[in-house]
Image (cartoon, rainbow, N blue to C red; front, side):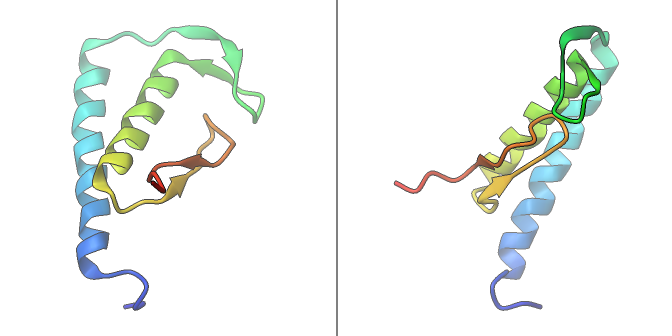
Length: 85
């Protein structure tokens, strides 16, 4: 394994993704999906579900403390997840 990534840090990322998947599952089960009046940077019409799941994933990764930054189809700009303070 690359010395820059410890197995403990990688486990934090896996755990964060698992937590996000659980939350997304509940969200999909109990909410409807509606088009919103915006397009993502790829030009696709966004669904509120897309935006919500994107936020759940980013929040879980932020809470892990193991991911510095991320990018996705819904936010095509780099989003810093760890404060440098």
